[in-house]
Length: 473
Image (cartoon, rainbow, N blue to C red):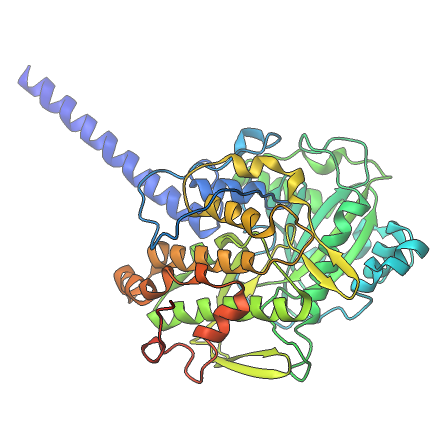
């Protein structure tokens, strides 16, 4: 009998040890790909739902200025009513994978295609074709060069489409987002987006990519994801895309419908972006200076966007900030013809995903009316949910107006998340937190990312916080 109890105790101990090991390995695997999935946290689960769709917001009530989010209460964010099982396989919000740079920037018509004059003279379809540098809709397979087809693999998926990785003939890595549009069939239990709904994202992607053209321009940053190519295609899903989808499905068990369901008349919009690194939440910092450089680059990027285009990101969680290692020693930002040079510390930041974003140029404003997405605000607890609420307070629910305080709210979110959640090697998390702690209670005192950047990061030694007066009355 004693032997039986010992054997039972040993068996139970081995079972629990096995469970802990499996859970730990699964967490590391999922986090490194920003998937969340069955094992991810609330932040990742929500982020996956937003991966290829329009995000959401609302806010009310005054929220206290918390120093660091140390609450052990689990953050609960809302499920999208159409997401099956609240799961989406990761693509780091549509276009993330390791690699370098070098993709050309599209220089064709930009936001003029949303101006009032052009609205009256062009249909939405004509505007989108012009933005894509196309005279007419092309067969979907013609969007891909032979090299792109040969190197193509599925990278991830979202409610509204699929994401594939491939390479250009020059060897530059790309992520291609393919979204069926204008069809009557439900795809993954969702209505397909229309030309009208997809146009703002196309315009914003082009506008922000355009800011990376020349350091001699009045405004410059190359830290918004660079757009390689846009396209509007038609036809059944090509065999090379189906094969890539099947290969991924065998390993990852797709939640999406197999794309062989599309008819020969199906239309698609296709975005090809540069490779940009891994998500901030999956990046491993080797020093405090790397972490400070990432924060400085995020602030500088938003500052340029605000000044140049009255830009607000409005959904800048850690999955929408990519980081990669670089040999570049300096990062250049230009605001109102004034050049700011920051030490890179060996890291390069890229901001992605503009489905919720807002910008203006001239008489034209492009934005997503988040009043139409009320489910985003039904979560509770945690800094990400609080950030959506703070945004609604800042905009007073008028999502068309320019309210750069929303960017300051997201910088507050980022500095808190980096202080307590950063992955580290050769440096302790406590050291990262000690470096960031003087900042975590400051950013909500500012009305824009530009104000934060000029206050903390624009001096000749932008990462030397010892020389900065951090307390603001």
